[in-house]
Amino acid sequence: MARIIESNTGDPSSTQGAMSSTHRIKAALVGGSLAATLDLLYAFAAYAPLHIGPERILQSIASGWFGAEAYVLGIRSALLGAVSHFTILWLAALCYAVVSERWPRLHTKPRRYGVVYGLLIFAIMNAVVVPLSNATVGAPAGWMIIGALFAHTMLVGVPIAVVAARFATTRVDRTVRVTPLSD
Image (cartoon, rainbow, N blue to C red; front, side):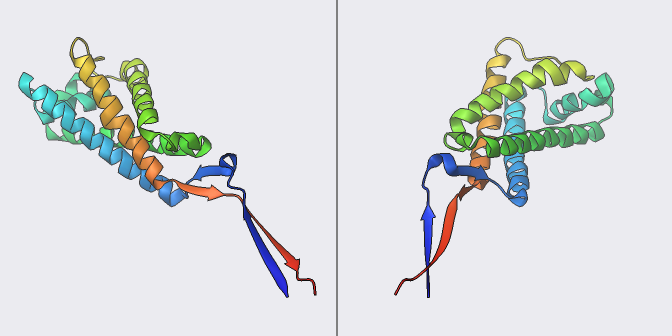
């Protein structure tokens, strides 16, 4: 006869927030889709009083590819803008999921770290991506910067972080020993 002894260290340092590749992709798709949808809904609502409709907002995203020509391409450039927006946020969500595996502490307070991640996305988009693109619009100015910061932190960063935390699984180091029973 043998006795099986299983021990769980229970030590937080031995716990890692790991995701299977399937969970990582799901976190990216769900988190990125949620963030992209919320961000676009915010933009549609924020610009509606200025009589700027959804098609024009999506064309402004596509202007990163086509410059001013995006505004005369009609629905095709609006669709490209939507696809581009969702793709950027799927990739941002995937990056967060991967990084949060290395630093599982990000899963402990996803709202806090989501705000920080949203600020990082805002900075990268406005300081690197948009200036290097053909976009005809620049960084938000005036009162719009407050709304843009709100959208990037609460509607982009937080949903991405919360979804990543939901899809994370905890892997605990377990030691299994088999010892013979003594008579």
